[in-house]
Image 1 (cartoon, helix red, strand yellow):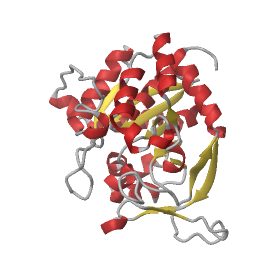
Image 2 (cartoon, rainbow, N blue to C red; image 1 turned 180 degrees about the horizontal axis):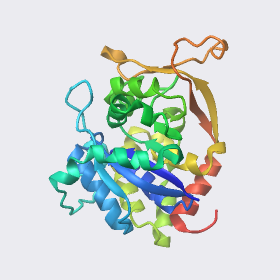
Image 3 (cartoon, rainbow, N blue to C red; image 1 turned 90 degrees about the vertical axis):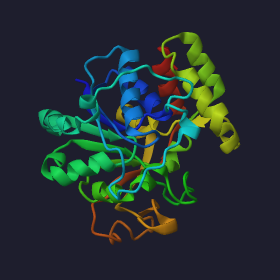
Amino acid sequence: MPKKVLIFCDPGIDDTMALLLAFFIDEIEIVGIVADYGNVPKKMAVENAHFFNNETKNRNIKIFGGSERPLTGAPPAFFTDVHGKQGLGPIIPKVNVTNGEMENFFEVIPLIEQYKDELIIVSLGRLTSLAILFIVCKQLMKQVKSYYVMGGAFLHPGNVTPISEANFYGDPTAANIVLQSTANMHIYPLNVTQYSVITPEMAEYIETKGKAPLVKPLFDHYYYGYYKDALPHLKGSPFHDTMPILALLDNSMFTYHKSPIVVMTESYAQGASIGEFRSLGESKPFIDWPSHQIAIDFDYNRFFKHFMSLMTGEQF
């Protein structure tokens, strides 16, 4: 039976790539998408989620409008320079979204109640909406089977500051609420996501097969518009948000380290993620919060095979 998956995201080029992967994985049934501010404003994120539904012709995926700013109340920063004017590179979706579709967030609660302990929640963006659910209905959220979160950077350079990753930086208060509220969580930080690299050759090959026509225009904008100059040593673009999705398919391709996580909330340290990596950590945690499985390494060859097989329909 396919895994029931509710995805929180801010589409976003790499979010959209992750949604495509999830759509192509037979073992996953996407039961809902919560579209938040992040890479783009909330309205664009909701429009892009509807665009994904239209492109995949999947009318069974319910879309919920999430948060439009962090819990701190600070105005959010967007990344249209990386993701494009509408968040999908050169693609400008022609989607009309009603106020009801923008402001239906709490309709997600009956969906969570419906699936409860068989539901997997994947978070690919800021953690604001997920934190709100933990504040409003903590006991229900603790019944969820498991959580897979893209966020953080542990003993690794950040991508929005020297030490901070974008999702934790964008709402560190929300990140801390989520991280201290439940223990059944896998975290995918820049330690692994920075190396989830798709190359121009991979994108070209996928284009020739015709199964996933969105891949090449998204890749071309992401790589030639940003990553080729920003991180030339990678020889491609990291598609960060694909990692939690592929973990649902092949969790064993990751190496994990177990630790509580605290996210800094102030000044130059905002968004910095702290875990226990000393040898005494397991016996003497530095804070009395739940411990999480932090991905610190992965098998790129398996990543490559899964990504290419799913996007082309061929076996790699």
